Length: 401
Figure 1 (cartoon, rainbow, N blue to C red):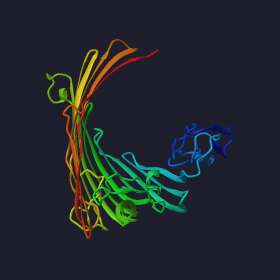
Figure 2 (cartoon, helix red, strand yellow; figure 1 turned 90 degrees about the vertical axis):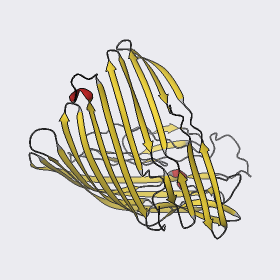
Figure 3 (tube, rainbow, N blue to C red; figure 1 turned 180 degrees about the horizontal axis):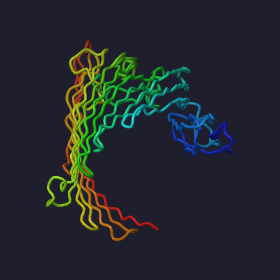
Figure 4 (cartoon, rainbow, N blue to C red; figure 1 turned 180 degrees about the vertical axis):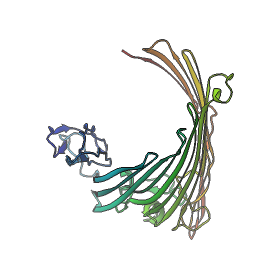
């Protein structure tokens, strides 16, 4: 069995083979001005549109994946197979831009998106899940008078996030010591996409050449938020993603970067940057406190410095990601330690065609610790995981021809 890439456009179809249980995106073909296109394949999608022309075309690609890489190989009857979920998407954006004043511009549009998911396998029921949404888009930009480059941005959008392919496969991944604090994991082919309604606002201030100060804030209301549900089935504990109702998300971020010589002309040629951010979230289905999104970092910050002198360029960056307690459900709790990562690099250019780059990652060798706890009708259990920190040194010689 082989994989066929089928397209309705006037391009020549390609025949290709793919390994078992792999997902690859076909190379995106160049789009002409005014073309509206939609591509579909297993687990990935890519959209491209260029407004400004009444000419357009719609294309669709469907890729099927064989469960075995060699069609001549006989499949053992006792070995089960799992069909990857086929994710078919289509989009049709429409937009218009207007300038009501020299300093003010408005972008108004709408986007229709649809997704169809098909999943099945030996011992698994065939599942079909279709979703569609019409999303309004409103962007506005106001440039403050004075010619300094200061501006205010605002946006009102409705976004559509499809689940990953791994969350849709119902074949479980088993753990050795199965317990409520160390459960198996399985997908949910009935998982629906998340639909978010959000508003963003930002202020940007350019106060010197190469210097920027900006403040941005965002708020999101997510419907059908995906949460992890713990269930006891057949004597084994398993985590399964489910749609958990509504979630509120808020973000505040400050960013600044500037050359040191802009505030001290006699200083060395250093470029400084700093970007802290604070995130809040609340899942309505999960009782509080700490009922926030598990993958969200409550507090993060990035600080960096760069130095350039002649053929030498060097710098370092420090990244901090806060941890803390998270309540996943009525009886599940997690706690993760903060992450601290220091990276350094050095670049030496011999000429325009040859350069040497040396980098050091995780110079602090910081360990990452996470605790998972269950407290419910089955008692109380806890598991701790430690990921040792390792320092990586990399040297790369780049030559251009």
